[in-house]
Amino acid sequence: MRKLIGVVALGAWMSLAVAQDTAVNFQYKFKENQQERYQATVEMSGNLPIPGAAGMAGVLKLNMTVFMKTTEVKEQSVTVSTGLEAFDAEFNGQPFPVGLDMAKSVIPDSTATVSPDGKLGGIKGGGGLMGFQLPGFDPRNMATMLIPTEFPTDKPLTAGTSWQFTRTFGEGQDALKITLNAKVEGFEEVEGTKLLKVTQTFDNPIEAYQDAFYQPTTDKENAVRVTKGQMKGTMTLWYHPEDGILHKAVLQASLNQTTEPIKKDGSEIKDYERESTQLNVNATVTRQSSAKTETATSS
Image 1 (spheres, rainbow, N blue to C red):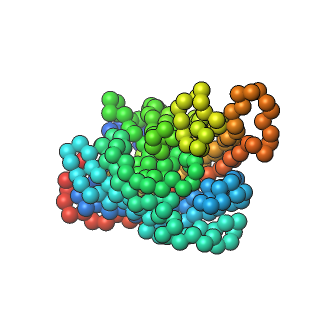
Image 2 (cartoon, rainbow, N blue to C red):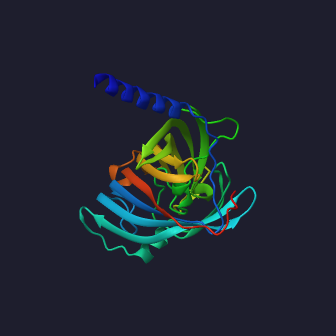
Image 3 (cartoon, rainbow, N blue to C red):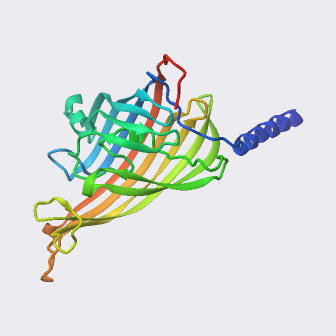
């Protein structure tokens, strides 16, 4: 019996070792009329970005159903539209009166183009009521959450493969560029399916300036307010190697920043003149279903 157990254990270990060493050339694969649905849970604690009450302390939990569908497929890119299908929230354990329409004003329906390696372009969206960027997520466009990784095209992926890429969150002078460090952890079975496991980390300093009208500016000499801080986090991602799409994502991140006036006369900055933001974000995104597609054309 002991020998049998040993043989089974050895076989399982060898299977895992083979899976970890398997090389893959992962690409996102989207077909015409493809529709995906994700269930997302986001919990934010600290100074919350609530429209009309930014900075309120507490715990805000969001439950969302997010859709993604293709609207145009080309040889080297596909256009996807994303948005909310359902939304509810609670604040400090109590229902929070934010309906789907109000949620869409912050996280609007939007579009983006996606290349097979995951580069995003042509991002079109609105929103912006949060007042600052959330770690690892651009509220203007859900594609940043559902297509979170840019994969290298110059080498196959095996366990331990690592690379860097840069994502832009926001737009204009208020845009935030974050460098992400990605690493393949190997394959892992999730709910009976063998998935490619990738981790991504970021640790980004924040330094932004505002003019007298509280608008972003790159003119440091004439700026009247400065925001400094740090945004960091870890994302664990599971990709379906054959479907070429995100299956599950877990995010743990934090944002710490302080905004204060710039006093050129050297006078002391009072505590009441400072605005500090401390925010922790925990999020889980899980693929729910995949609608049948009408054609096998993929990018």
